[in-house]
Image 1: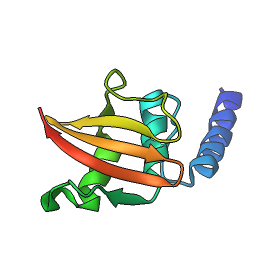
Image 2: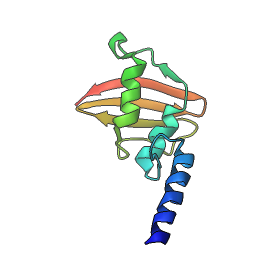
Image 3: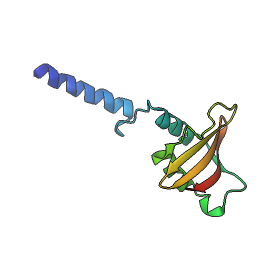
Length: 109
């Protein structure tokens, strides 16, 4: 019992150091990894996107809580990939390039 408790204390210190004290945020699943990659890129908006959807906070909420539809997305194209991110009946069409992220369209479904 003493060994288990000492091990738990070390584990807590290691996890705190690895996550920066913000909690556990390990991205091993494809959805999480792609969204994390897109959050790290600079964002721009397409010319055809309506003004009401040119809100970085709205897009960041999709990149935090959204789900990627990999069946509709074009993940094999080079250099830019197109992703469809869904959140509560609304879908964002995003183009992810090495130099940045572009919000192309907002689709209502």
